[in-house]
Image (cartoon, rainbow, N blue to C red):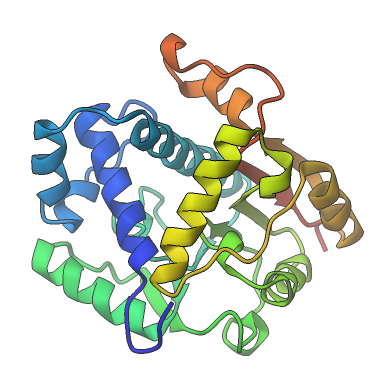
Length: 274
């Protein structure tokens, strides 16, 4: 993102989350605050426009990754986790609809994006609970070790990894790996070279668009390579799902995806208990 400006891709993701509530009725992932946060503009536009296939695919993926993350989070809370850390929080709304008494939420993001978000929250009349704290940092220039107190946590890291350098990714992952009993969910993109021609062209076009707003794609992974990295880093209990698995779990029959189809993935991993 450009210094002095809020994240443009965070706004796009928020619009897609709101769109899922309007177009799909929140069937995969219910977020009652999503439409309020984008001031209803997405809802009004989508009710008047046809449902473009590329928009539908992105919308369902974003809904599925949030559902996957918050389902895993609920299990972690039942197992005793009492802190949720949302890395690169953008316009994520979990902290403001947190259903878990006693669970604290730390949002970590660039200060410019955090200031913008707090203005949007205020404008939408969404209260910031006492259980929420904000930590400003730049993932490329700072370490979580300098900003967070070590504590068993559930880390939500959605919509961030593709935009980081490999060094920025490694530094954040190293911190999470060093907090015993913690868990992390993040999504990632497979490299363009691993995709069929049509998907590759679509990904390259998306990469071109986000680069023009100062948020280029920088890091890609193949599932097997990422699994090797996570295990070498000390993570266990890996659950990595791609397009076919997401479709089988949550999509309507008309959105079925053939087994082995490449594309965006979301992974859940744990660190061993101390």
